[in-house]
Length: 388
Image 1: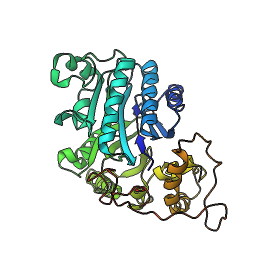
Image 2: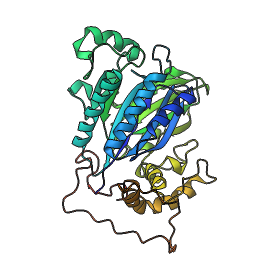
Image 3: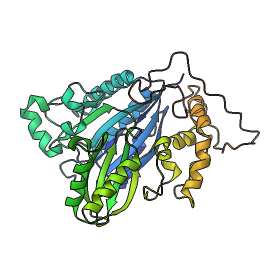
Image 4: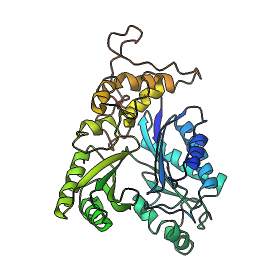
């Protein structure tokens, strides 16, 4: 069985796209790792990049990205509405196939050590990789952000990094490295510029304030659009689906005399999360099949052409791609993760009745299920869990 992980590093630069290009380029030259997606936002001043591939290759790619970010991003000059502690703010690893949470934790620890050894950037571990209970929650590490953390880490041992010196890197700050399940970054725009309203709604819906389980949220001002935004991280879309989050924000907005103006997905989203909710119902802006994780894996494997960024009918375009996902995941393992170093075949669309496309093998569960997200994500583990 091939081993496949995802990594979604967040960089504290979303305005100078030449810098973002350089960071992505630094991560793109490692064999066995693929850049699936990138997204930048000027108001947040943040870029989110999605990588997938073999664990060791993805680890090396993200380390190189962190090094390039340290060269290009000066945290003493960086501003934006999103909380952050460093040039490479967070590096979360996600096990996808044939890799256990424990193996990802070991990988995260190795990456943290390498970031310190190579670039002298202190590292904190969070979520499943946390070394102490209070650091499971990323918000506890980020308290005070870069400006506050660089002062308090020097005098409070409880706020010192897990790896490296208490003194943060003078311009690159610190980095948080973790292991988590698939997360959805979801933003909802309000038809008001009053950020206080967005903050009230964020407080009402987030889990830590007694709102929806598995929801983290903050209210921010999006000056580029003249709107307030509820910025959301959904950490378990099966337990708390997108439409439930949307409905509560809509209800809370109406109570305050405003309405939802639209919403957006940042980065990639698992297919199942879209199937659980209607795209039209969520008022998703500029959503395309290219944002579906499994579709990007399929495109990299060479069995589907890259989905169009702005299709005429996104729902109709999504449907035929979804029908080929079983083959897509199996082919990704057989082609993209093949250790033979052979070039990937030219992209082609797998369609019914095409004699050039071999029949899709049946997906059979092993007698001993792999440890993928065991007891943490899927109640029915499967080596092809992206398609089952």
